[in-house]
Amino acid sequence: MLNVKNITFGYRKTNVLNDVSFSVSKGEHLSIIGESGSGKSTLLKLLYGEYDLSEGQIIWNEKKILGPNYNLVVGYDFIKYVSQEFDLMPFTSVEENVGKFLSNFFPKEKKNRINELLEVVELEDFAKFKVKNLSGGQKQRVALARAIAKEPEIILLDEPFSHIDNFKKQSLRRKLFRHLKEKKITCIVATHDKGDVLGYADSMLVLHDSMIETYGSPQTLFTNPKTPLIASFFDEFNLIDDTIVYAHQLKVVDKSEIEVVVKQSYFKGHYFLIESFFNNEIIFFEHSNCLANNTKVCIDFK
Ligand code: ADP
Ligand code: MG
Image (tube, rainbow, N blue to C red; front, side, top):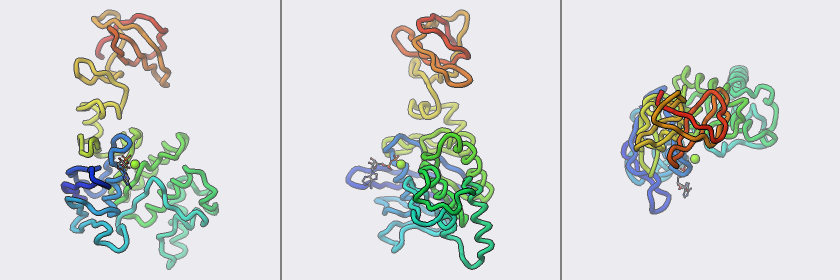
């Protein structure tokens, strides 16, 4: 169990995080979301022991996680942290990077483990490549493989798929998160991508104004978003009489009190997002077909 108790931290005078508390159980997958600059990376770095807290404490089981004032070497063996910068060894091969923390004592086991890891991140064909010759997305995958190589108790991932293209992202997410669940590795992921959260995270925490704006399961937060910030993370929405209404909660009907004028239709794959005017206010709703600009239609709740 990871226990974060009332932590406060700032790089300078102003606090980036203010009185933040939460806990994560073994094998749980927690997503940390928030706008750029909201302190997601800072929080992960604090969990890793990269900085000293101004106040509060972080405890993993019985062990206190401490910063550089108390530790000669930053970090802990049982935690792996994949930063947004990866920190790889550029002039050595992919397999050497992945195997960096694995013992040389059992060369055959080491080789097998490296192959298994390369399979998880789909880099089998690049084992002998030097890291400096890889693309950003490939480097990120090497960093992920290296972090899980020795099965840490906790893994901290900072926007783990941000450099990976859409072609690979879906399958890589499934493989990596399934792997972590199977090994019961506690996983904390900072992200601004709902694709990293929905379908994978057990719980999520929203950072805003240096505090936790809300905490709960993705289902609860999606179904009942308490603030526009939370709704905007998930989907297009409207504020109607101070109530958050997702675009997918509205539909075109034959007759209703709400007659709107279509401003623009956006192709979204299996549906169109329609931007419309209702008394000078913008209303978004979803529709199966494209609607021509300036068409008048009635909409209502589903
Ligand atoms: P996020 O990951 O959510 O985008 P960060 O944790 O990187 O946010 O940053 C939170 C705030 O702390 C920002 O205002 C950022 O400018 C500031 N910050 C981050 N790193 C440093 C640093 N090393 N020194 C000073 N300020 C920093
Ligand atoms: Mg960040």
